[in-house]
Image (cartoon, rainbow, N blue to C red; front, top):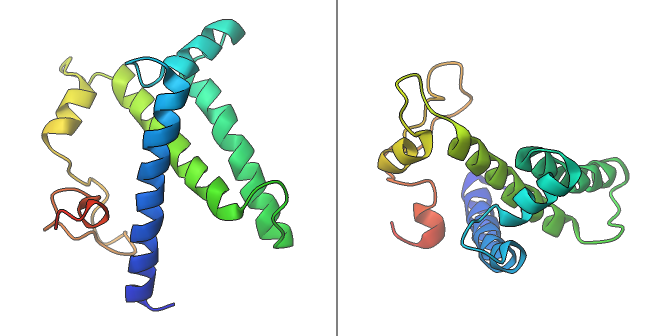
Length: 144
């Protein structure tokens, strides 16, 4: 697969991730709080919402690992498992951002919304992001 072919594939995959987030997220949360279903389950089990989300993502990661070992899809298509895992990982990132404050007491989530800067830059990185894009989803959403 060439770089251009992979870029196209990745953009299609990320559109599917956003689509899954939008459909399942509304169905499962049943609330304005995006993490409501995780919060409810966390209270029932005596866990944090992040731990509950990890259990969900781990199920998909186990399925992906099985596919990597066997090259066989068992209960659901591998692409669906990958999409679900990406969605759950972004949910975990959101939960972390929601609960964190930086050393100056600023809400990390609010700060992230103001500016999306990639701190993973430098010679140690295998590649660099295109900093001309205002959002990593510009290509996915067709805004650039």
